[in-house]
Length: 94
Image 1 (cartoon, rainbow, N blue to C red):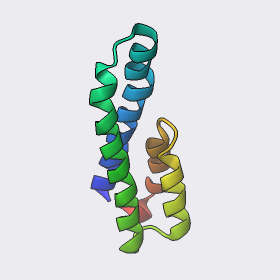
Image 2 (cartoon, helix red, strand yellow):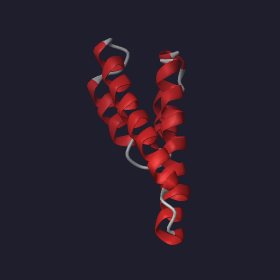
Image 3 (cartoon, rainbow, N blue to C red):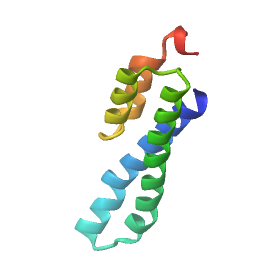
Image 4 (cartoon, helix red, strand yellow):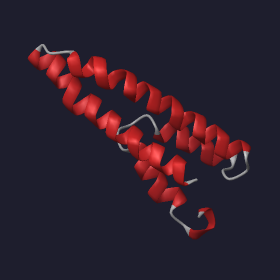
């Protein structure tokens, strides 16, 4: 479960970097290099996070409803961290 939580933090960092640093530099500054670098990294971390949700659910550490919430939480910036704090920080999941 710890690797899952770390992947959520990394996915959040990549989302925030992409949305609030790289994309403004591309569209406001005309410099798209960071989008070309951060974009694929973010994509890979997003897929990894979703894959790990699936693994957690398949191994019985996360029920289907919780897995759906985790996947939906991956969409907005900061969602995986919010999900972790709201649903996984209680002692039953450690």
